[in-house]
Length: 344
Image 1 (cartoon, rainbow, N blue to C red):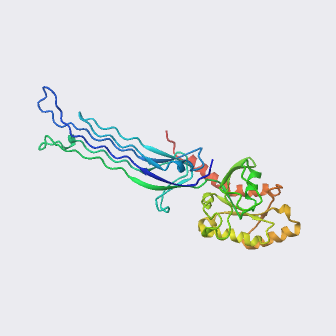
Image 2: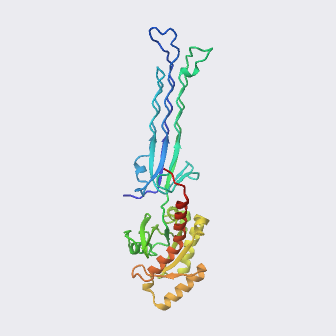
Image 3: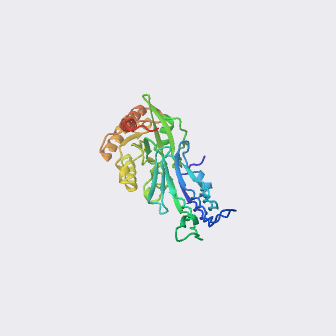
């Protein structure tokens, strides 16, 4: 299945049915009077987050979603049938943006969350509504309200506990494949990963979700390489895992490049808890490792872990460090669920 995280859709709610002008005509009923029914209400357009979806590929092949209009009113005080609603099934983590791609209408982060995108028009009143002591035989009715038409953008942001960031060929996909059942493409050339990957990681009896995004390069915020379009998938992460290639000639410069791009994308993203790891240490001797680690620590101003995704050296320590940042958020969710009032 092709991964798609941005889609444009056109939605329109149903219009209301028109009211009816009708009069009661029966034998032996001298004054029947007006009996026109109301028009039916138009259908709404909804968006609902559902489990089991992880891409917006369905909206590549269908972009137009139109709800049914209400039926017109009829005689004998019969109200027209309401139009059927239409529901857009989207993955959990989908943002719904207005046509300007900046105004956030809704952010669906939980399964079952629903939001109304376009409200159906009300049905018009039949002539029965206009009967009065001075107007015994009204011969007019209201038309139904028209539906609402909108152009919207759907943007998927994967929901993961930890996000992997780094330059191309820093070993992100190798690390994800080593610690989970995910099978991302791995090769010895840049930009092997062209779309985000998710993997479920287990450590000490606990599990969490990790997201791997395509590598960033200098100038990604200006559109170079694959740009920073995939950084939205690690925005929801509780902690970032920054991998630095230990075999690089300038590990400090590599780390600086990633930090600069994170800051350019969003100050909030750059302020997230971050664990910096020197990867591919199996290709370094002790002197080279010590020199690279010291240079990296001086650049980021904090501790640096070392590991080898291929050899498995130091991987457990990295996963435990990630879990320490994730477990407080899990406890917060558990507390909120326990204090939430019961509903039938």
